[in-house]
Image (cartoon, rainbow, N blue to C red; front, side):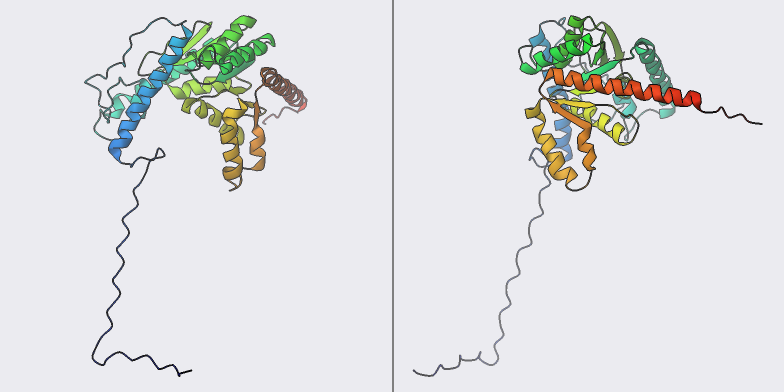
Length: 335
């Protein structure tokens, strides 16, 4: 074999050409959770569309019910004197006025202190109307659920079973699952309570509500749901339903309420959330293992009612033990 010859060296006086620099990567476009490019205009439009979507869902539930009085099919118009920032066309609710921030507006000292009095009045009215509720259950779910939907029928049955056990049924007073639960209470002859909320459009109260309490402020309304309930039953729903679900879980986790069952009704609907909580939130130790036992998942109205009844009996026994312990403890006197 012929020996390998060395490769010829580069000629003297020549320089090696530099490698062209790679083009800088274009900045990654920020995206919304819906996959669209995120910018203030798109997100403001999404907020407007969200309100319109809520209105459409409530109207669908009202039409499907056939039990609601007709209302004007329009969003209440925003007054020209409103100084709230944003380009929304709908009328501002009292909550919106309370939560406004930034931008030009009236001197807060001429409005917010008086608003505190209205909020206080709403608490007083809610406490007064619901003071006799000693054994209540709040039931939440979508307003657009039709009367022939299996979840609607299940909510009627849950309300009926709990009503027969002496529970008052508390809902948001609207159509869909709320109407179904109030209907079940009516069938059982149990107190049927609705806690309505002011929206930028007319929602109405379902005809199965016996005691209706109208609220302007979500915070006051949410307090009533918790204060006068011994359990929450959560049927399939949207953001409002999720809000009540995680509100209850947070209050349990922070020790504000105890022995308070949270029942997720509809195993198929809630399976994805439960799976995500286990595989992501719990796996990354954002919650504790025991936190997953704060919720019960079922498709059985009788089982849901049983969970609530057993928890209520435990609440009663706990209260009795505390009363006995308090009576036995010596009274401290100051000298």
